[in-house]
Image 1 (tube, rainbow, N blue to C red):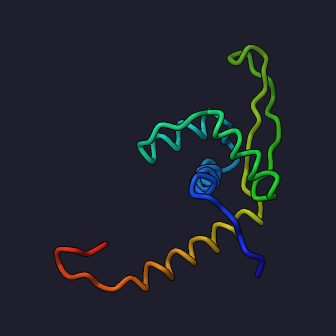
Image 2: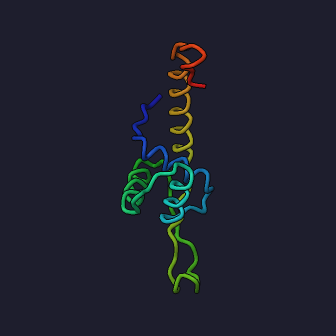
Length: 112
């Protein structure tokens, strides 16, 4: 199996793109990430991560139709690819394996 290289921020962006199910675009991805994590995110960082994920073939993009509410501009919509789904599964499996190896720390020091 090919080794997956994802930083934490890329992993979060990939998860949000998957959650938005083909309806995600830069600003919406940023807003959803902020909503889910409670951390402030820079739109430039989101766009850079989206470009990296697309270059790794974990996501793909297409253009929406132009809308009057956006002044005739289109949105670049992102959706996860099969490669992206496989990457998410591999990351999830690795994390679950590692979490499973953490020793039980007692009733007051538990991770659960």
